[in-house]
Length: 196
Image (cartoon, helix red, strand yellow):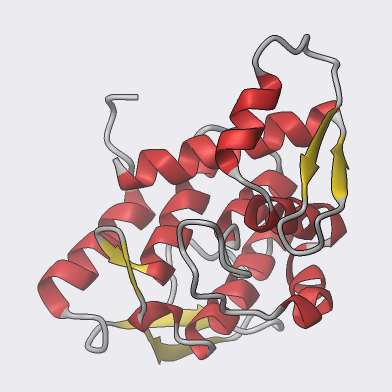
């Protein structure tokens, strides 16, 4: 865990600490792969328009910026910077596309610790369209459950066990598959690693 996080995290730290949030002119790649200059976007070396993941990241980046994530404070920097850095950590840990995309959007509905949601719960379909059904479900569970309860539940579970958590929005149980438990734990770890 001691090795420095590369490219994307450094770019955002430098951008926000040296240049200020509104003065960085980066690049944003449109759905068709064309490149346009825009403020507070992903560094161009991160977004390869020929890749499905990169196109999804570019679309998410545009939506996050449109909703003001670049101007919301979060831990050491902006919410946008934190979300992107969490995504980068998950990529460096070689996580699956759905896990990485969930990390990119992990707190967009608000969480127990960060109460400012960029999307309302009525907009879950918008997030689903951006990152896919599996990734959006992870985002929803991340936002709608208590981290401490997840950690309590997994203690003593064997690796194939399911887990049930209470949805803080509805009071109903959310049943998690073993894969979802593992992916949520990794997203929580990346989230905490970025804030360490």
